[in-house]
Length: 333
View 1 (cartoon, rainbow, N blue to C red):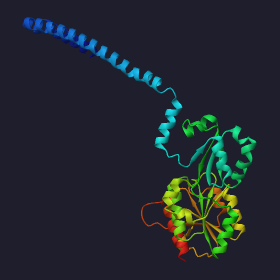
View 2: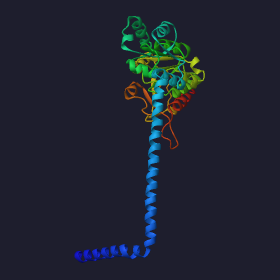
View 3: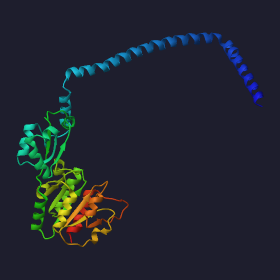
View 4: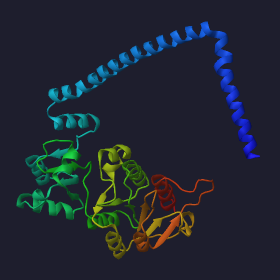
């Protein structure tokens, strides 16, 4: 069957070729000549068009290349351009850089949120004592390379050091404990664990002050500082709420427990509903981040793990919303 089919297919191919070569073109010789002339002319036209297109592409590519060299001649200082572009996009009102400017800010009584410096600045006798003292007070100090600092300031003349001012001063944990116990028999403090979004921090500050909490505790790392965005979202509440920035949150919780505070963490996996929580004592409410919640090590420091009962299909709440609901339940008893 295979051989016969091949023969049959081959025969048809021959007949088809024969018919296509003689049957069709023989009847339309004049038309074929016209078609040949038309095809030749169109081919020539296509060549001309292609040549024009090639010339135009070459010309346009040269035009595209020219601005690159032109920009280099017009703007030889790339760092100044980068810095100008960045300052247009970001507000630098709370930033200070340069050795003399930063040193005067460190020597004064201004509230500082964060400091970036190179190893040369950190090892300088002039800066070392000031930086060490500020670090013990909870100011975040990062030792970075010169290139990294240039990236942060987008090419500014930083001279190896830059800082960001805070919108409010912080107090020590000991001062916060004394103040809270002196003003209320059962004060409530709020501690933040890993909340890096300044909008959430500002909203929690606003809720904490509205429900008459006596203070806020934020860790030095893995937390948003008291920036302008935090102050704006807090809508003035930051001026009436004491904030303590601690180096280590877990050690701070241990210190609070030694001073008679109970530590209650908020978690969706908590076994105790916050509406059933009846403890009346100095209390620290720990609020974790939305994605990870309270860290495992911090959960071990908690005396209670509380949850908010949800009735809908939504499985979790925003961190600031959860904090507001919890503070309402805890302060209304």
